[in-house]
Length: 138
Image 1: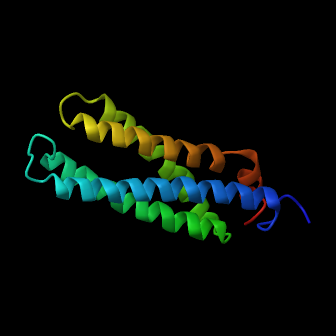
Image 2: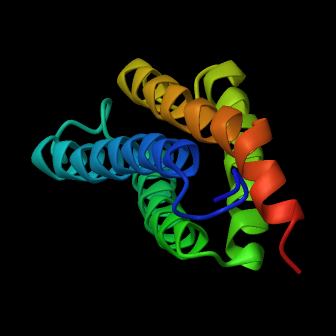
């Protein structure tokens, strides 16, 4: 058995970490929308930008989960997209946190936590184990 096998313990461990990070990202994104709905009458806390960003992040998290599942099953294309999406979303989150006044503080904090989860995805998917695995496949 080689380390470029989907069933190698190091590969399984890497994908387990990625799944946990993506699940945390998806769960937090869903909880954010629940919180926005619960606080919808507080227009200072739940602005139109919160609804738009929250919906897009939840959809993106669902796509990220789908890519994770497909990549763990051996899809080279899904793995490549997972690496790209995690990096792009990190940049978008940094922009959300940096832009003053558009989003309430609670959402910036939530986005920071989502960013930490996505950072975990980016680090593991760009690590040697998974890059080697998918470089060996067509």
